[in-house]
Length: 345
Image (cartoon, rainbow, N blue to C red; front, side, top):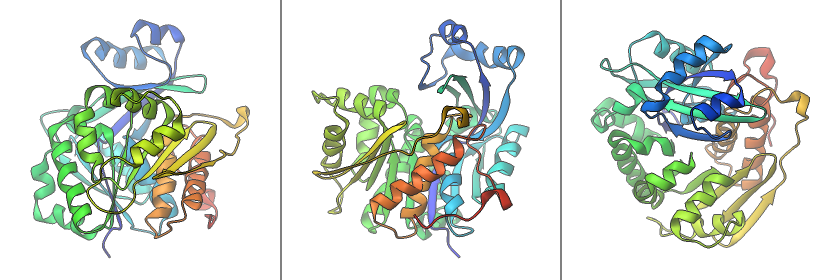
């Protein structure tokens, strides 16, 4: 059976720890942000491991989303592409992904280590500092190989994280797959992923956005995109509407979904805007917010990719999966008896 949903981005191993505010200050990091590591951040990874109690968690935003989607989809529905090395970190990531039921189709890069992400937890915030490593060397040639392009042709739904656009291999692959989706009336979804993408990669973001049927992101990412677009507003509903109405490669209306943490989720389809309250989670039940946004996207896409076009139900599915992850360490999805029965939403 072909895989229904194909996700692509940067597979990473999260090195996660609860840290002091002083560590954020030392490396000039914001408490709730995501950036690519620069030279001045490289000592952070060693300091994190040497100074704090760390947990290693399989990560990479779109891979987390694929795992979340598979959590509520029939078995063998989701496949994921990205680049890793042939090292121990890659083995950890692959085992975690496959334990969650997704098929991994990694490009192996021997000239660089598997990418890592320092996930720095302070309170209910997380600051993510990513060293892409092998993921940065993913190539479009890999996607074009017949056995890999077959996965593209067979899938009906596609999901990429915006981080994928920072390197040429990811960008060119996204162009080809988004154009294939538009031409063949399939659904292509993209996540805004982080404010810096709108600040430094907006041309690439806009190019892929033209053929995107679903855009997901959080309020900070949406407001940054609006600012970089010259829109004089911080109102999330207005921004969602404006993104929805941007030029598109086919006639289908674009769906824009903006989460706001514990606040309501905003969904725009053209000028039609709806808001959905987020179920409250007691402070004592919150273990870790890292990966919650990815989990929401997983639940949303997982139901949508089963042919459910009722967006209220898709939001509910996203909130359900995010509500599970927020009670775990990192983006973890309980399996077996712990999984229980998935609602119908």
